[in-house]
Each structure stands twice: as structure tokens, then as C-alpha cells.
Amino acid sequence: MKRFYVVGNPINHSLSPKLFTYIFNKLNIDAEYLSYMPDSLNALQYFLKNKRNIFHGLNITLPYKIDIFNCINKHDALSAKIKSTNCINNNNNQLMGYNTDYYGFAKMFDKININNIDILILGNGGLARTVAYSLLDSTDNRVYVWGRNKKNVEFFINSINSDRFLLYSKKLSSPYITINCLPFNMVENDINEIIDNIFSSQIELFVDLNYMETLFTKTLTDKKYDVILGLDMFIFQALKSFDIWFDNKYHNKISYKEIQALLNK
Image (cartoon, rainbow, N blue to C red):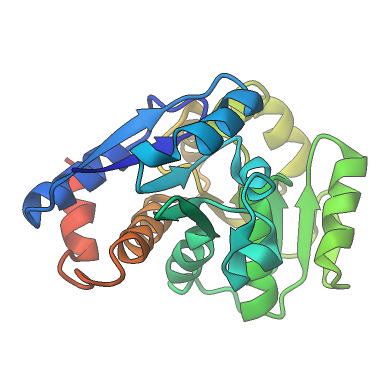
């Protein structure tokens, strides 16, 4: 039996086990999908080094997407460019890192009209890096980045190396879309600070890449902001991971709409 894990901390909220268990059962694949919550980076490094014989693939979530990039030696071109990894394939104990979040975000963002509008990214971690590179590759919009630590945000922007990416310093006076890349538990500690100090009346859409409703998104909805959750991105990146692990053997055997219906139950 093949074994796969979602790796992160916290991890109990993840829908990945539900999604992949459904796929394996539907396609009669002899595999199981489990959760692993390392309590430290050292624990994760030990797992990758000494337990790779027990897993065939991993999905990586917060807070390890950048850390795990530095833990393995081989990456596809996209993961190597972004320096953030959320999918690992284990081929005869040789680990290869991938970034399927890029694919998932691009597929989701295709549905959003971003003509003549600025974009504000909240966060500067691994997910924010993926979003930034996707926007860099597919749009010519001006992108602002906000984070709690100004030096970290400046380092983030400099690493993107594009004059279209700017440090957020004051409320935007022209129409814009906000993309939240902050962990749900981090946001909920500072809801009022973020809303009062960052958002302006010019915001047209709030895209929260956390795929479940949180106190933050509920607060925004109550305040009459337009909110989109990141469930589409989650589904698309998961299906991409599945194709990588099984070398496209089951490509298009499971549809996006089928998974969407499953997760919305």
C-alpha cells in the first residue's frame, strides 16, 4: 500500500485527507492518506531523512513551505524559482520538490477580473512568494505587499526583483484587490488592526487563500466586503499533486466539480 501525508502545524483543519481518501477509494487505488504534525523543523528534517521509506508523497502546508525547500536537494524548475515547496514526490527514496500552489492559484485567479486594478498581498511567507511569482508571470498589475515586519517585507520584495512590487505604506486611494496569504490563526489575532489600518473604501474584492470561512472572513462579510475563499486553489493544487505522484496515470479521472461537491458537503 502506498502512503501519503499532509504535513503542517496546525494540521487538524486540513481537508487533504478527506479529498485524497475519496480519490483513492473512487479509483480503487491501494493507498492511504494521513496527517503528520511535526512540532519543530528538526522533527520534520528527521522525518524526511529517516522515514522516507514509509511515504510515497507529501503535501506541505504552513509553516514549512520555505523550510522544506531547503531540506531537499532536487526541485522542479518552478519550485526552484520560487524557493517554496508544497508537494514532494518520493521515487525510490529520491525526493523531488514541486510547487503546485502556483498552478492552483493561477487556475483560481483566471476567473477574477483584474484589469486596471492594484493588488495588495497580505503576508510574505511561502504562499505569498508563490502568489507573487504567479502575478509577476501572468499580469502587469502594480502589487503592494504588507507584513508585520517591515524588514522582512522589504527582503521579500527585493527577492522578487520587479519594480511593480512595492512596500505597502498607506491606505490605497485607487481600486484594488486584497489577497490574504496569512495563516488563519495569525489573522484572527489582529482582525480589527488589519481592517482599520489597511483596508480602504477602494477595496473591490478580498481573496482569502485560507479555504474555510474564518472569523476574519465572517467579519469582512458582515461589513459588506466581497469575499472569495481559496477552495478552488486548494482543489486545483491537490489534483496537480495527484497527477505528479501517479505520473498522470489517472489524469482527468476525477473532476474539479466532483471534488468541489465533496468538500462543500
